[in-house]
Image (cartoon, helix red, strand yellow):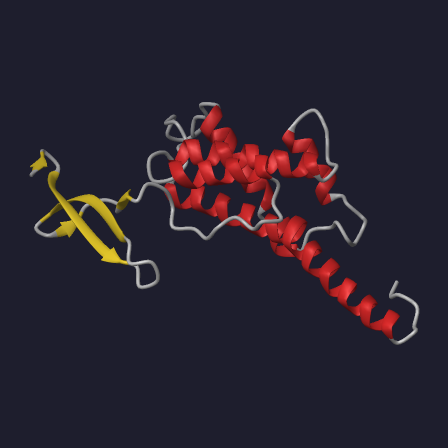
Length: 194
């Protein structure tokens, strides 16, 4: 089966953990793929579960961004942008638009809230890819619309996952460890850690 561009090709594999099948398709010629592989079953990206510490409204946007990734890079990037804005607003960075909220975060001088350098360098990418998704933007040299590529939408999801660790998972782990230490200090008759 195929079309003018070539024949449909598929590949599958079985997950050694859960025994579920994953199926991907592409167009090919002479048994060689001509384009990217697209996962068609199960629907969505192969990403880990959302940490329990992440609020439900934020995790639902992230899960939806993962689920539409194989269907629409633009939709996934737009949902990642929305997820980023919800994270920032939930952690106290509120302004008229996302660009200003990102600026507030990057200007943060509280060491407990400031981003590590790897995130500082990439966080604005989500805003830009989200803008490509929501607003037609032309390339000034080719005059063609700038599209969000699948690997760029995937990158947005990776940055969101790092933000989950920074804003939700890391602080929860630190609080649990500190509580454990304070319990030991209290048992030894010592004052709690600062």
